[in-house]
Amino acid sequence: MFLISKAMYETHYSRRGLLTIKPYDPASFAATHYCFRLGATKEKGQVNFLNQPLHLPPGQSKVLLTLETFVLSERTLALIGPRSELVCKGVLLHHSPCIDPGFNGCLELLIENVSDQPYTLLRETPIGKALFFDISDTSLDLQELRARVEAIATWRARQEAGRMIQEWIEKKIDREGPIDLPVGGASDQA
Image (cartoon, rainbow, N blue to C red):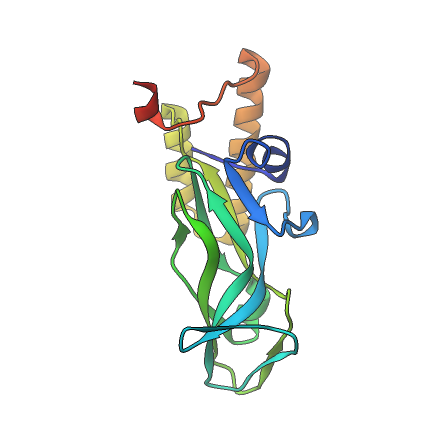
């Protein structure tokens, strides 16, 4: 398992259909994570695309849909989390911890204002982050790095671990040449 960087997404994963983000905004993809954006609200099963600001009074919550749709192959997994800017303002994002392999669609999340002040969101406001991982070929060394990543408690430390994994992969490529990544999972190679 290894982190899919912005460069890997743009040069390999998106071109081969292993991971698709639409509409893709290159400015929203930092080196190690993609910031997904607010696209619509959902009330009683009705999707309401935002064409005006979304006002969230104190103590209120709303179901949100991301602007982006994500298509993950069976070899791609994403971990998701909120933007720290929202948390610092008392606005919480409730969500599943991951986007499963094979997922196809936009994310449905619950946003809640736990502060004593109203909060306003605009369409395309970044509301969360996704870290994408290739899970198709986990070696013993990558398993050890993954265990270290899972043990790290702070966000900054997680970013550093992702950089370490990326460096390890680049060194492996330098030593052994290009990695031929299979299209299917391990069961497809039998």
